[in-house]
Length: 517
Image 1: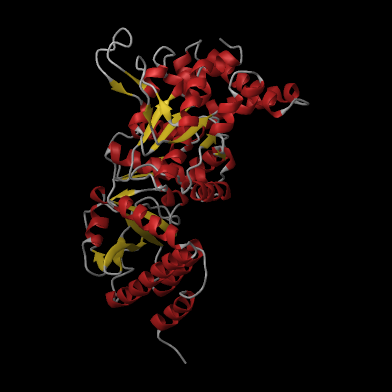
Image 2 (image 1 turned 90 degrees about the vertical axis):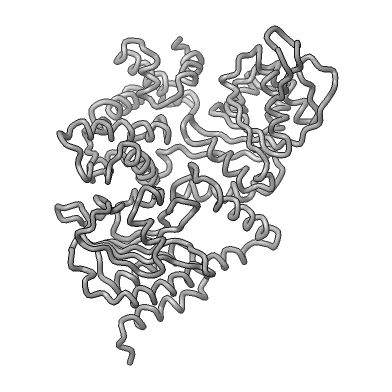
């Protein structure tokens, strides 16, 4: 009969290596086994991407931890673990800040981690990431045999490699080649914003991105203001065969009508007053790559016709020139408008709409993504922690519940602004800079101001919208929300845009369409 605790823990994991499990389930079993082998308050599996450690699975840490991105150069403990050849325990009186301070769920009244153990993971002799263990009890790991964790780390690395190989086998040979190139480029690139979340709607969106990215089809990304349409465009480009070529972005809403043609197609010297030299347009700059046209529904009809011609023929003329240039550009467009409705109302060309929306992608609103709000909050908390020079920045349980209960009319952008504002407010209430700064519900400001106004707008408009179609109901709700905000801010549109978490130019256009300006 087996009595060795290490063997009893490892045998089920060895059996899992050949099973077709999801990554989430594979990593969940791995961390459960680790906590069984080495009892502690929290464990985490982190993958190294460039110079950033990304949590793939956690157990015992707050939900927002999965959304955080730990920059190695900002976290000396994680850096030390990566540069160690094997397991490492930090002294209980170590002065290096712990990245998990304040994030352990069952903190029993105190927030600071007292015992920390970790081990680097190597896959095919290359550093892949880390396993970390943390405890609030200073004596938890004092008698731990580090060779036990080293043996576990070897199996953890095998688990990771098995999962990645199974994922690769699910693709054809061409997909494998392109995926390897993408990972190679990503490993050497600076970490940027990403699509963060685990909700079913976001998982489906990621699948759609994987499907369309490898094609040459035009994509029309739709969704409310602030949902992250530009991030979706970046993800499509990053996973496409054009990833080594430029991604050029153009906000059509910010284009003065007189300069729109020059911005898109370029101009020659003397083409118009102020054209002192030749200039390439966005299409030429994106040649071989991708052109992202944000807020494409804002283009005037005359400009839409010229854009359609280039999309159909691949030929363009600079303003003031008779010669044509051929460009090879994939176009991704985005809008928060219902373009089909705009076509019916004669404000958008039907032929251009069909040319752009060969593959439509809808980005879900934040209120439709459940607990993703906590992961995104964690991402923004980590950004603000570094920006404010804090050792730890966290949400208490009441503030987490408030975030989950809110309807987020401004979506992810509103959440980003709210977290930044709440962190500053929470810091201002402290006479001295704390080691762990906790954001409470009052600092969020959702209960007494924005949230109640949103709820009252819905309640007051309920009888008005009853019996109407969805678009009319949304217009009525938006009008009520904006009108109430205008009253509170005495007609100051900049303050209204700030409260609602929307771009001021977009708010002005929406207000005009709703007849509020």
